[in-house]
Image (tube, rainbow, N blue to C red; front, top):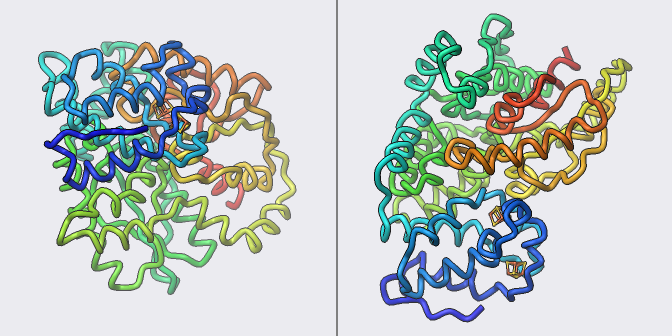
Length: 412
Ligand code: SF4
Ligand code: SF4
């Protein structure tokens, strides 16, 4: 696609990135076929090719309208289009640039601005969010059902402890994250137990917080960069101390940490450190799969059949981190019978704060996803991201678990 970017952006770092990405798109439209919002709405402007065209217009200096913003807001940032695109168009990076410009040109007002401000300030503060979750559990009958359904029961009483980190030379760092400690504290604890069996001590640093994804995708990109710099500062002494990896147990956060190097590429102070942090970032699937030769025989020796399981691969795992088939292999080795799931490439509708900002589209996607996941009557659903987990759990009676919790139980 040819573009003539306007003076305000052409010679900026963002303008150069945007120009390159737009230039790679050859209008073929293959991506529209795998775009969840195009499938639901059938409008070219609710597919990747149409959105690229809208962003190009904005960056060429055309006026920004509510309609432009609506079509960009409806994008899930699921990156299914990136997986499909034969030309390697980095759509999500272009979307970040386009959304930021649209936000500046057409500031939000009223309830929309208020809702986004509330989400930015509550979700990114683990203490505040934890208190809100506790209060929400107590007031559950009074909450709107869409919100009440998203609150899982308090599982801390069943929480088994982290192993003591003292016994191993190999050390990895993990990110506590912002919402996961309050909603599903067992996920990081289960990861620590599994890695302990692999001879790795897993440690957290309380000075790190939200990975930055919440603010970044709510278009407060300057504050998101501050979140990233704070995490880099918290982690850097550990990096210098020789940690092997930063294990991020929510694939949605993992994809953001993997992007630190790109997002902070023009930061004179942090660019190099950010790139190093991105290179150290691992999904637990990558760490566990690297030890598959020693782990699979242990799992096979268990010989226990654990029943049918449907795996939901989050978009951030399969399209963002490009990890496919690994959780399925491990869960099968642990004794689960993996059932087929149709349209596994499609988003479940969670997509960070999307389920709260675009509830109608989100619920349609969730209904479709749950139909596909439960078609072969599994007894449990497994996934790899806290957002997908709580979103799916809110709509179904089957247990929805993080795969590492199931692996931890199989190894116990
Ligand atoms: S990121 Fe997902 S929803 Fe957005 S355009 Fe690409 S495929 Fe469609
Ligand atoms: S598949 Fe890639 S090249 Fe083709 S229209 Fe979509 S983004 Fe452009």
